[in-house]
Image (tube, rainbow, N blue to C red):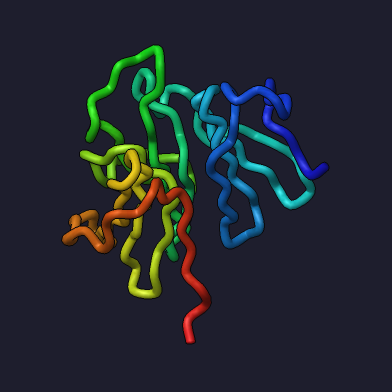
Length: 164
């Protein structure tokens, strides 16, 4: 085993990790949603918290993770019970390599998978109830573009292949 998240036995869905991403130095980042923490695993397997509960609003938990070409970590957040959250209250946060936080996008519903294309645009899979799943697109400045694709049954993961 490479590493583990504290308090996360395999059958404990309250502490599940939905998001995983590698930075350019080979560090693995894992979102522990129930703990409202993102852990950083060095290539040797040692674990340290990258950001903790203070980085997230009450009831908001990290879900999807991806890095841009500048080394910034983008984190989609979802609101879970026991907090009641209206559809469209989820966000995407941006963390610089030293952990400085800013809000990148708001108004999302169940954002999960995220990936950057070769132009630096961020694509986000919104796992809305079937059949309303969307793939949304944002410029690198955070401007939302028209919905890229719609009508999917709860899309959760995205990736782009290497440039040709």
